[in-house]
Length: 344
Image 1 (cartoon, rainbow, N blue to C red):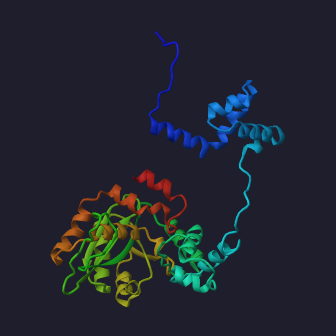
Image 2: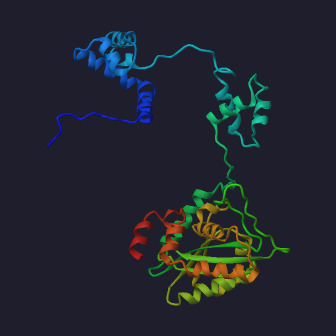
């Protein structure tokens, strides 16, 4: 059977916590309860006993409600000492930090004319306007970028049926490990050994924009290595009428040896994106994931090369597509997202 009555029996800490919430975080709700209990016929003394407050406080909030309505139950601005630095200090800090620079609290304090406040107080005011982050390097951009991208999309739309479109790029990998932030036990700091002599290799990579097929090779950053990679791409797609490779404007892509090789292999079309726009190339996202995978690891040079091969060997075309997201690249026509889903 249902009990005739149920009473709350909170422990002392829980009761104290509820009392604290009622008089602090929920204080406006407590004032509304005062009004409701008064409308139900309870006196100010009875309400004060229930809510553990003075009857004069109950009468004051009921009067505020009768005078101002529901907005009268909110807190009013309270007079007090003005904030140090004046009311416009936040705007001055924000205008100062818009320009990139090595901004620290001492430098900000100096540029603001040494306001009369402690460094910790100025730190709190800076935290109201800014956050501690690293700036991001950005390329200066190509002034002809819209025109170049429009011409590139026209070239891709004009390709014959059955053509293959690949995005190509290169990156450098070093024996010296990349250092990235990671979780480490408190009170310790991990140490990654550095080699006595650094070594470098160049990774040539190409992503088929429709299926996610990935092709890569390791070598040196030379025109001869680049043309060898292009020749390998032609052999992978022997039946495609055109193999279109879209790349950036690196110097080896415009070398005379590359130009002469393209003249002898008309089936491969080498197309170029806008200058100083690496963010347009979807392969850049694959390089970012690769370097994050290699971060904080100290291995031998053969071990570093095995890491690269293992990374690409264990990633499927679907994973490559998800990482590169070529349908977001401005290199491709607007209807390419639909074509991508059909092809995949």
